[in-house]
Amino acid sequence: MDRLKIRGGRALKGEVSISGAKNAALPELCAALLSAEPVVLRNVPRLQDVATMLKLIAHMGVTTQRQTDGSVLLNAADLNLPEAPYELVKTMRASVLVLGPLLARFGRARVSLPGGCAIGSRPVDQHIKGLQAMGAEIVVEHGYMVAQLPVGRSRLKGARITTDMVTVTGTENFLMAACLAEGETVLENAAQEPEIVDLAEMLIAMGAKIQGHGTSRIRIQGVDALQGTTHQVVADRIEAGTFLCAVAATGGEAFLRHGRADHLDAVIEKLAEAGVEVRAVEETEAGGPDPGVKKGIWVRSPGAASGQLKAQGFRTTEYPGFPTDMQAQFMTLNTVAQGASKVTETIFENRFMHVQELVRLGARIQTDGKVALIEGGAALSGANVMATDLRASASLVIAGLIAEGETVVERIYHLDRGYDQMEHKLQGLGADIERLK
Image 1 (cartoon, helix red, strand yellow):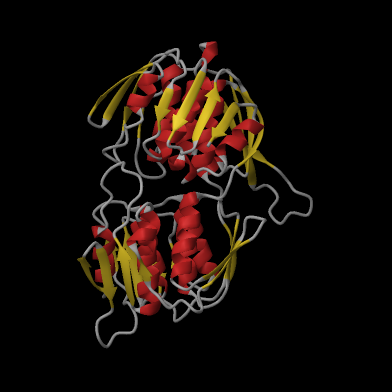
Image 2 (cartoon, helix red, strand yellow):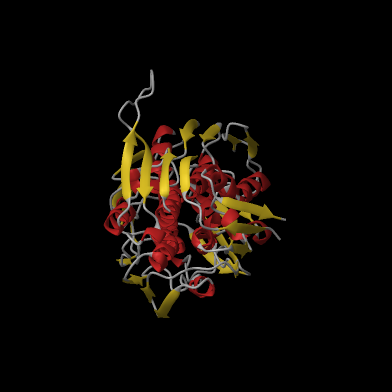
């Protein structure tokens, strides 16, 4: 099983290219199921979850072809098996995203209850209730969601859907399903993440009629069919935020090419309060179609060793608030910054599993339910630690970059689910890090 060996104490300097967002690429791969015409996705990250999703839709009969430039060609014209078996979805929560598109286009689906990181309850009941409101008949049996349209109906019907909680994958499932439904669908309490906006823009390019994406109320007018398209996957804000925290903690200066500062307002505000310089960089490419569009993020930090960084408390919440996917990485920064801080996790109940591993490295953290109290200024020292989930693994890598001596991070298959060749990108910034087989 692969591990990462890190020798800490080096400042990070240089340039790194931010990959396409995992949380945009996965639903957009599923969106290709809605059309019988070819779809091309550009800037698709090379991640384990993406490979799993490609294998899953290929199992259904979709033709998939990955290009050397990072694009993926998809053709669902011959999709003939609207089923997602347990063997292919047990490690990936996002597999539930095939349910809406399959129901919308084929009128039936059989999808295994999904897996993923063990960071807390993420029930599928919201997905089921929303699709039932659109006329689907769904039962859960033998570990599968079995869905179909009622006898005599050929399409889902528009509905007003108000979820009990803000759910990103739920919003995405309903958004895709509604594109081919009969009539208007209104999504209340919709998630507002940039990845949802990106998915909506892709669907609009395919011929969908969508308004309000990026707000808590989305309106979709169903159409008879969607066409093919070519779409660029938005840059991964969580990968960018992870590198921002890494540079902040180790010190140095870096440019995150393709990073979107406007997608990280809450994180960047906390970094600025901590004493880190961060700004959006605008480039005007010769002959480019969109001069003035933000092309990257520049970051400079004195590093924790300088004693100039100040720990910052925060509370995770839905976008545009502080993202739960950045909680572990920023907590690592807080362990070595000066002062005490309080971190409150409101999204997932089991998202402090990285704490005990950080303590092994010398962090001073106490947890009580959803609250972690961090005593900053710790001198971290290298040790063997074990990743427990995707973002926890990133926090341990950052800790290893700061710690004195050698740190070995075990079970990095979690990291590979969401970060595209992270060790190579860190090596390019001057980190002493290598993958051990």
